[in-house]
Length: 433
Ligand code: SF4
Image (cartoon, rainbow, N blue to C red):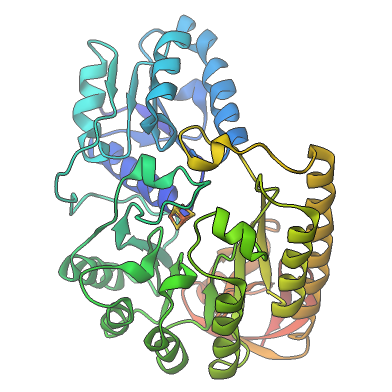
């Protein structure tokens, strides 16, 4: 494939980013070089997300826009993969509505990508079979950073929250072996990576050994200085996990713990299997055992059974916990989920008002939390150039807060002391000591 170029476009979560690293790794192994321009690519691949309807609409519009490019250059191969196409109705729609799409494959077929691409030169390929094969190991990765890396420890989810499509498209939980995870971590350390984020839809239900023990084992890998993990489900947070975050110096003092709704009625309709009281008890323990811990969460506004009274309990939860950051989402109705059938209690403009109110509150709290760091000196792992200012460097604190500062490229990959001079809702800035 020498001289041929490929463009991989990724939507969605960290798991999808990690899958795209493997897809790009395979393309490089096949001899492609990578580009970020459709008009110079020989292969264009959309790695899609199914969690929200507007992301799906964006994919349809982006693949539709490539019709003219395919007409001009019939040799180009255009494909769609990931969670969205793991839904049968989506693949049928693409098959019928977008004849210029050459290949489609689901979340269970990633390791078959080279064969799928080869077959797509002869005929259209649609491969969304779910399979019970063991997990593929040793696949190449084209990683985005030379300092921080993600390592998937499990795939799928068993929780069946009533609004969520993930268990339907990624299947039941499957954990990688401890040996394979440690082997990947050691390989990353040998390449100079300093920080690893362990990934899974619900890392605390990792099944080979208790998750806190896996954290202990990864922390023994020489060269890896920081370990993070996403996502955790409140029902699976144990005392041992809290103790490990508190006591292991390599495990970052940060927890992303989605609460999704502040009202017990809504939590029950969501099938989240914890109450607001359970959630607040975990937060109390975390704050007591790990002073200064960074807490972040996901919240859904406008779940169909949610009333304004329910929403006020979400507001109350946010005021009580004072999260450092909140990922707020408008409920998105997903075909095939139990919640799909429930008619919303609130009108769209009421839901939008509630969403805006939550966002304004959290912006205020995030700014307040970040302001507490002004004047303090923090340890920052320098990741590279700042996204918004190429003349600055950027890194993260142990708690995961982004810090921008001026400094030499030789600092990249090092943990340095930075004095915080300014704070905004989303990031900090400072100067190197
Ligand atoms: S825990 Fe719930 S929200 Fe998260 S992926 Fe599993 S089913 Fe979806």
